[in-house]
Every structure is written in C-alpha cells, then in structure tokens.
Amino acid sequence: MSSEYENLYESLIKGEAKLALVGLGYVGMPIAVEFAKHINVIGYDNNEAKVKLYNDGIDPTLEVGDDAIKNTNVEFTADEKKLSEAKFIIVAVPTPVLDDNNPDLRPVEGASRTIGRNLTKGTIVCYESTVYPGVTEDVCVPILEKESGLKCGEDFKIAYSPERINPGDKVHTLTNIRKIVSGMDEETKNVVKKVYDIVIKAGTFPVSNIKTAEAVKVVENSQRDINIAFMNEIAMICDKMGLDTNEVLDGMNTKWNALGFKPGLVGGHCIGVDPYYLTNIAEKLGYHSQIILNGRKVNDGMGAFVADAAIKQMIEAGKAPKKSKVVILGLTFKENCPDLRNSKVYDIIKRLAEYEISVKVADPWADADEAMRFYGVELIPMEEVKDADCVIVAVGHKEFRSLSMQDIKKFFRASDPDDEKIFVDVKGLYRMDELKVSGLRFWRL
Image (cartoon, rainbow, N blue to C red; front, side, top):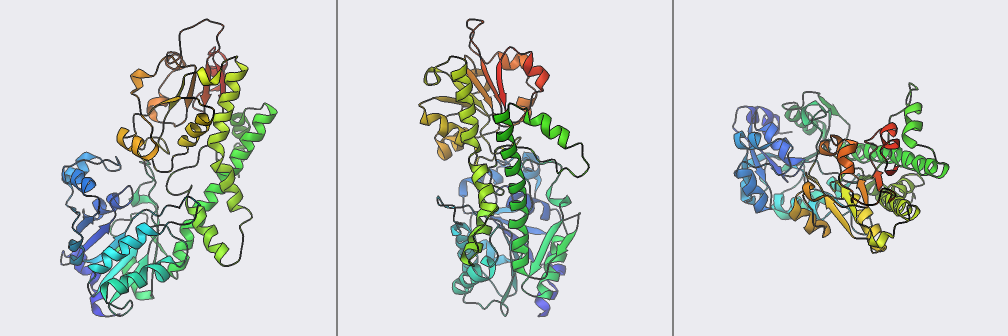
C-alpha cells in the first residue's frame, strides 16, 4: 500500500484530510456528528430539505438532538462535488427490499455513482449499508470504477464496516457498540480499524475479508428475527390455549439460559429486512432457506394476527366491528423513535381496513407529514383520542407507558355500563392484575 494510505489516519487526525458521510439518516448523521468531534467531516445527503434542517440546527431523527446539531462542526451539504475533498468516505444509505422481498440495491448503487463521479486517487470508500455478501465488491466497485475512471486497488481502496446503530436506543449507542471492520486487503483493514477506533470506545473487531463482514450483519439480524418469530409462534399457541404469554415467558426466563426474547411486531429497516438479503444470495447459490424465510413469514403475519384478535374481541362483546371506532396508539416501528420505515403497525391498519373498519391513529413521536406520505394515515393529537370502542396500544412509547389504567379508560366512549370496551395491549405494557380489575375486555399479545 502506498504511503498515501498509510498516512491517511494521521492526515485525518492532523486536519489535513477530511472524512465524508454519504447518507444522513438515523445511521449516517450520528456517525458524522461523532467523528466531527475529532476530525474534519463532510455530511452529504441528496435530500436538500433534510440538509437544510441540519444546517438550521434541527435533528428530525432525534438521535443526537438539536443542541448537538447546532454545535457540531459537520459541514452538511447537498452538493455532491464536496465529496471530492474527502479521502475517507463512509456510505450509510438505506438498503430496503422490493415488494417481492428481493433486495433493493438502488440506494447503494445511486450512492456509488455519486461517489464515483467525485472520487479522487488515494481515497478509501467504506460501506456501512446492510447488503448480502458480495455486493460491495461485485456491485459497488464496478460502479465506482466506471464513474471515476479509476482502478480499485490501484487508485482507490474499498472497505466494509456494518452499521450497528439501534435507532432510539440511548444505552447501546454508536460509541459503545463494538464495530466490525474489514478491508479489501490487510493494510486497508488496518487503516479502517484505526479510523473507527477514533470514535468507537468499545473497540473494533477486524474480520478477514469484506464478504465475511457483510455476512456478519445479515446473520446477526436474521438470528434475532428467528428468535422473535419463535416467540410470536408461542404467543399464537398460548392464545389458542387461553394462556397468558407474558406469564409463560416470565416463568421461562427464570432459567439461566433463557434468551429473554418477547413476541411483537417486527418492522424497521434492519430485522424486518436483512433476512431477505441473506436468503436472496442463498437462493442464487442453490440453497432454499428452511428456517429464515419461515420466521419471516411468521413475523410478517403478526399485524394481521393482532387485528384479527381485536375483531374477535369486538364480536364477542356484541359489537359490530364496521360501526366501531378503533384507536391505535403508536405508528412508528419501535418505541421512543420517530422512524416510520417498515412499520408493522400499518399491517394492523390494513387488516382492519379489509373489514371496512376505520381507524384513528395517534403517535406523539411520528411526523404527521411522513405518516401521510408513507401510509396515507392521518395522525390525530393525543387529546383527540376519545369515544373509542376499541383501543390498541401498538408501540411502547414512554408516553403510553406512563398512562394509568384510569387514563386509558378515558379514551373510551361513555356508554351503558354493560357495553364492553375493548383494550388490546400489543406490547404487554400493563400487568395482568391491573387489566383484570379494569372493567375492560382485554387481550394482550
């Protein structure tokens, strides 16, 4: 490796070279802000509206907060030409799936074209976007070479370090989650390790090659997906047997080797997506997944399962579901996070719509414009949650966790005392003893 790569770390530390982030979402923006505490950073995103928010000191992701954005030294820009100033480029764009659950590589391909147009000799391009093994070298490199006219290995280097940021998690944050690092060769890997060690207090974990690093990411999320799928299947079995799933799992978790997983809606941009990247490449190699895809099938069906449970409760209470007012609390894919991508709460809404049941949705964390744009859902303020026949708590936001059972009861229609009110607790936020004395007809996952 030429000295320009060997000296890249020192050049970054001395302020002689710049690092650039491509993609300023829930993953890229916190990385940019953290690196900017130590070195010069360019934060690029092709979404000019998002860049303007950052330049105005506003953090729409809520990951680092407005104060951190106002005080950061990151040079936020939508001008791709600024990337030519960087010698270390990190790619953190989303990698979703298509409607048929095949990988949608368009964002990472688009980012590669943008970088390629502005790539200079002596640069290391490190991908963090979740992909199946082989994408960085087989898909991204040809694009970088074509757009730049440069040769990988001679004029620039590539690396891969899968993101492990957990949106909304203020405990497991960027700096204290150990980071997998890899490079196209040993020397590149060593430089990448030194660069990430600038911000990763928990340390880095080098692996032998890029494909291994790509596999680590999709395997770790597939493992979690499968474990939750097992819990969801247990929840469905317990429901058939009239058992309380939470009590069963609480008992199971008293054993030292229990894993502590719980049933729930599995959405978001990682666990609900990454397994499809792994099974896609497996199919191409002639292996059909026996476990991973079945786990995905179970988890993808949980929204409909919850909706059907709510409908059953309404019918058993003598209500006409089509004439009932159903309110859902929560729309984001996880608690205490404004991220609406791949929210499985929408699956509950879709299933209820199949029965012509209209739904009102309240979520203090979600952006109303995004809710309408993503799902066609009009959010209502919490103070307008009233006169409900059925309330479904779908997300465990802190605002919902703080609601007492008396607070919940105020959401329902004031009517005949014999008119049963339906309460569905998807997240198991309320104790069984509270529910039993509430006077509500309840069901929980």
